[in-house]
Length: 172
Image (tube, rainbow, N blue to C red):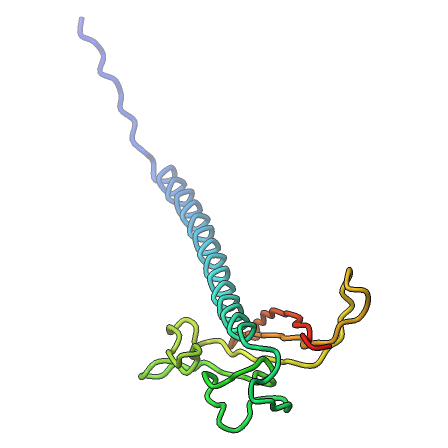
């Protein structure tokens, strides 16, 4: 007796097409998930860059004295106090703005030393407002006069991020 040979069955054309279709659907779904994850990562990085710029400029402003060391009382920088590295008190930043732009020589958005920020930061613009303000501070028994420093960073897609700090007048 001879054993009967087993019949081998091959994939039919329909089975192969169904397998290819399922594989294509899985590939598209996986690709979309990866792209969505990359977009969220980029958005978070972009937001972090904006807030880093705002925080850096706010730190620079808050390190300065409230009153002008030269005794000047006008808003904004006095004669001879530009560029920004010459600012000597908080209100010198009144209506200060700086915009980034990408050029062959580097960007125009710079730190206090005049060093251009890296290219990814050049899509941002920052603006500062320093109006006089009166704040009610709990525990100090009433209203306190001072300056409300607001640093706003915007990008070329209309995104906007702001930081605020109230600086009380040291000589009420």
